[in-house]
Image (tube, rainbow, N blue to C red; front, side, top):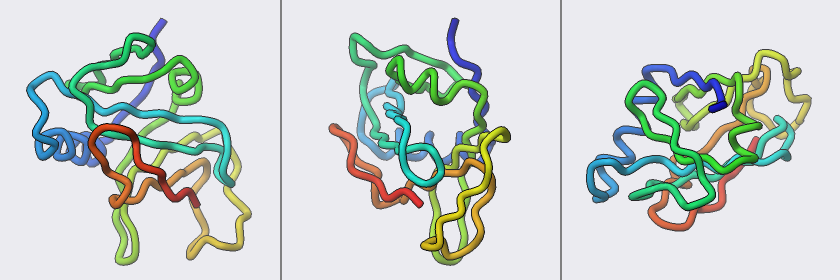
Length: 134
């Protein structure tokens, strides 16, 4: 059974812009690799890809194609993916209503429950670029 993932309109717009400007053909999607780790509970990497790898699941979320490995499917099930932008940072946020807020003192502001930021500078084509997780 495929995971249940919700994309906000802001996240869908952000991902579609990544794909449109990637230079990849129609049918390209966002490879999203999520693993356990980081103070929010998630470590994430993503990149625009022409097609899913043999071991990835293709997930169509409201017309946005996501390529997810088995572990990412499990980690993202039930989450909402949003795009947030502030004066100092912007990126994708993974919102899990069942995860407590981060107590990390390195955050500039108090994070919402279960949110992981993926900085725009992490956008890459090909192999996923390392990302900064708060």
